[in-house]
Length: 126
Image 1: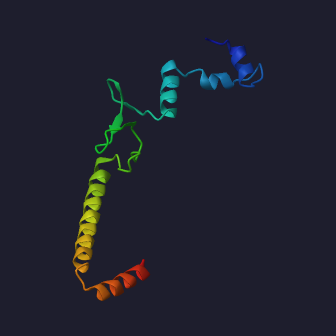
Image 2: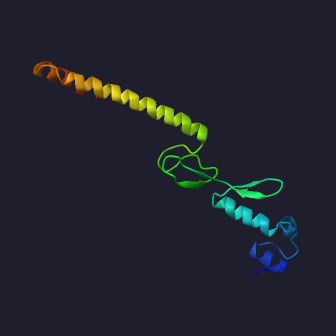
Image 3: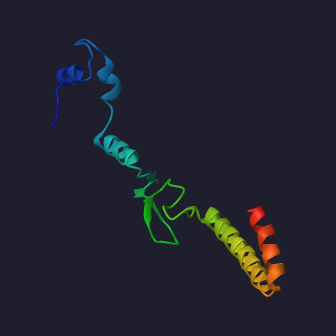
């Protein structure tokens, strides 16, 4: 559907003698389509010979997103460098949790009254 110059001026609230249409008349269909894609979160990377739609995927869950998104719904960063650091941090945290669990498992062999006393102190800290 195409509108005449006067219809466009009416639609956008410009006066019949307005020169605003000249500002926008150089736009091409491709410009409009790119803007629509951008509004939907799809980035168009231009090279000299072609235009390429870029997508990223989460290496943890496989979800696909348009470029520009930083985090997956599963909580993992989509940027490869950030994801690598995130993985290292998760591994470090898991190792700490494993050490805590092993320590707690050893403490359960304390005699009953000493275990109760320890657990009550531990609960106060929480």
